[in-house]
Image 1 (cartoon, one colour):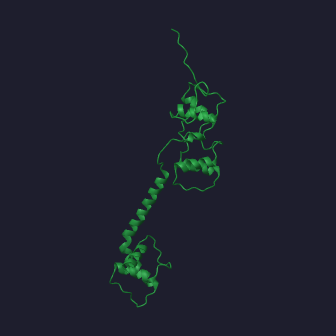
Image 2: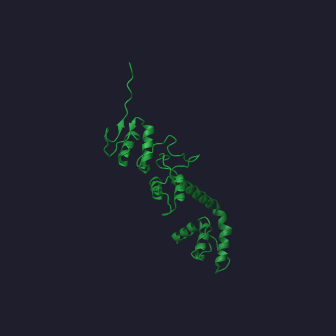
Image 3: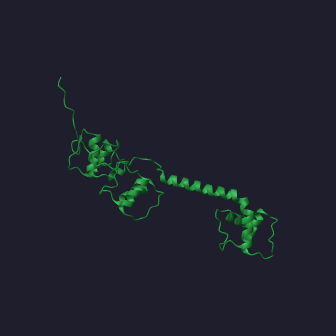
Length: 227
């Protein structure tokens, strides 16, 4: 009996509890009323459900109103916290060097980046590119205040591993040219080698791809000064 009473109370203490639904029986409401007012007796031997609902609303709701309001506030705070956790990057990195509008960046690439950065975010499995770009700005990197500059016209930000793979050959070469101007990379070098050069000289990391000075890249020597 005590367990059933507790169950009834737990259900009826929920914010916006629906007393009219079929599962909320007369016995359930009566047990909830008696939980708070043990001496309560219906005015008739066989009360209708509507009578018990009104009794609950008039006599019990005022008693539990502070608790119900607290539950509502608690739920709102929990929802806000969950939303903030979903929005917040657990390990912030700067991916502003990726322009999702580029034709080289596909919807699948954008969704892969979002999934890696925000694994808790649930997105539609299919969408068009404008929608994917909007989600990229929302969850990965905000839209630049004045929009993306024309390519190869401003100082490029380094894109960390493994996301640097989404850059094109030209974008990789431009970043290397700006950050390490003493390097020369022959145009025939494969993208894998350019990625390795990028990792070693821009990201100061060790690449799995072997690269050799004098073959894959050349280091410009400073001119000798006259005595």
